[in-house]
Image (cartoon, rainbow, N blue to C red):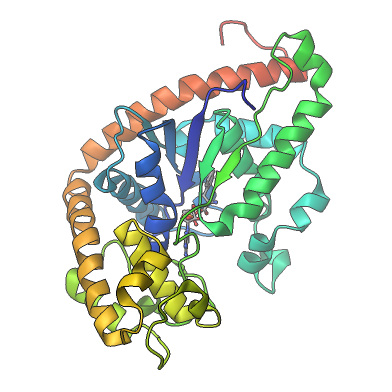
Length: 348
Ligand code: TYM
């Protein structure tokens, strides 16, 4: 692990309605990590097509996610921002890793079971193999750190298992080529802070999600101030005032969720929020949360709007990022081909 230079990789799907969960669980973490790491941030369009997509809507979603990254504060010049389909090594390495991952491992993936629903036979093979593509995304950059929300934890464990099995299966070839003791690092998930699993505003037992049919269940990054205010005011709560210590949030999922959102937006902790709002009723707390959410998200929403109005500018950012990503990924892919024993032109 220590032999590998530290590099961050993460991805977000362009499937419409980026929401507060994506923002707090992932995008704000990306912004912070830029200060300490080399970062590669990817709009994962190959993942999006594992379920049906309208091509026009997909194209605008790719630009929208890119705009959200930049409006949130990601620097596409110092770091790399690109869309996955422009770097073919993702798909190439995914095929190789499909031959490393075991069917038994894939059968344990809970997100496939949730997404495929009852009619599993009708799900695409891509949806089933999705976690292997995700492993390829990370490993093709030999990334050491992966900031994600809690829901991606199992996929990260799979990526670690795939890396380890590849290293073991091909250890002799890796050593013979002088490519080090281990070829792929074990990527570390970074799942930290008070908002690693932001819940629905309508049901504290359900994750905030793009696919929830109720728009009131989530705050979209495209929502204006009035919509944000109305959704927070309508958010489900319980009749008790807020506790003054975090232990008092046990068994109160809606209160826990709103306190977690407040803490993440403020850059503090749930304990810190409860030190200020312990014993307050929800109407007082929600008023403060509306002010905080509008002040934090307003500039991001406005920045996104400005950026998506100039698609040529966004596309230029993605092409530049893809070129730089390709240079890193191509090198790994050539090494992988040598490890496997494939014949290739040395100049490739
Ligand atoms: P996606 O597009 O579903 O979500 C993007 C990021 O947002 C996080 N997230 C949440 N965090 C907190 N609370 C929530 N309610 C919430 N909903 C979503 C996700 O955990 C994720 O970090 N498979 C990934 C995309 C991906 C990827 C990768 C990530 C593809 N390749 C390689 C990391 C590394 C996904 O579908 O994320």
